[in-house]
Length: 252
Image 1 (cartoon, rainbow, N blue to C red):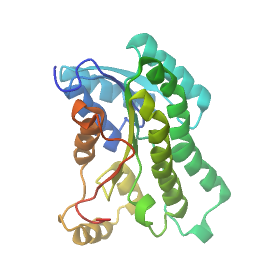
Image 2 (cartoon, helix red, strand yellow):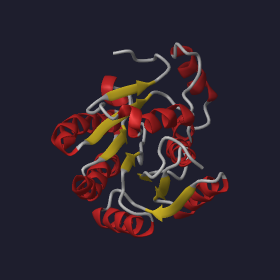
Image 3 (tube, rainbow, N blue to C red):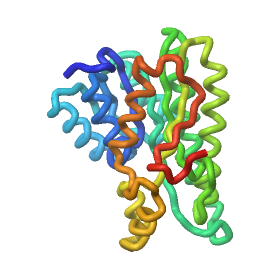
Image 4 (cartoon, helix red, strand yellow):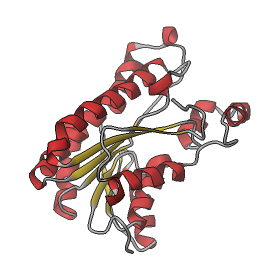
């Protein structure tokens, strides 16, 4: 399998399902060797096998992004099995929708550990190699909730807003090393996480579709194509940017 990402080695976190799965498969189709990582190692293995079945090159890695030790071990494993990481996609995330005043500090800590510190851990572990090679690309999956807010997702929105701010600053620091750092903000997307948050209520999806000018929920593949572009050669002069993929739900 050949494509615009031939010769690139990519690590995708939270790639066992949903948006991460679509990203991993897309990068493999475009020619990258992909480390499919997820806290659920079995799910990662299924996605890696699917990529290989399509003619791509992929390995599965069990990774808990909230643990710096787990991240360091995963990066070392990828470097041993595939080589130096050229592209990092920070996709792993978690949410529990509830009004802020009903939320607990335990929930805050888990959301922050996965959504924000997970990005910090992965960047800290992969950037030294990119700096040494003088090239690389990082794409972090934030959310439009981090740009415009979202009722019932106060702490989640805070972590996603943190990713956006971190991306801009890291892009400035890494530009001299020719490392692109960008983030993508999905709008409502048809994923297992959205289904879990909806709790089996079809009215939520229906109301979201009515609100989206494009008239449908986002699909994981909509995000995957944007990520493939941002780590590919055509985006070589793009860094520090935040791109909403929301079917027009947010436009500023």
